[in-house]
Length: 199
Image (cartoon, rainbow, N blue to C red; front, side):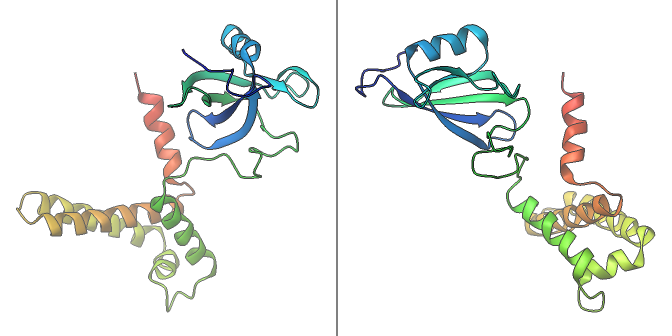
């Protein structure tokens, strides 16, 4: 890998640390050539600490190491993206990231929808909220709705109307997310099962 450590007079380049699984950015550190070489040799991310003026392996005191997965060099060869598997919190303040964010997988709009379902379940009026009304009716009604939507998806899959197929698919997914929460789970729990089956 062609890394240009000479661009800055101090020989340091930024190293962006990203969780290899959640894709969340955990922290920003700096590396010189020696820190990079030690990272590769040990598979533990090592920085050059500007305050301590020495090499510093993340986790050397806390035990919260950053286990190396992959290193990518940017287009100018002077910034690294380092994907890791973190052991414990990354920030010295005890948070998952140095921006005090929780390091969890985010599925974009689906995660937003899951949060909306949770909020409606906990706070909404069942006479005004469809989601709240389903939870009030109970597990049997929620499971029944998932079954109905699944049948409608199958029916539309056999026809040629893509708009109807996608619409019924959205209904099925929406009601399945409700069913998951009624059972005490979220989509990430299903993803974990799928990951465990990967060969």
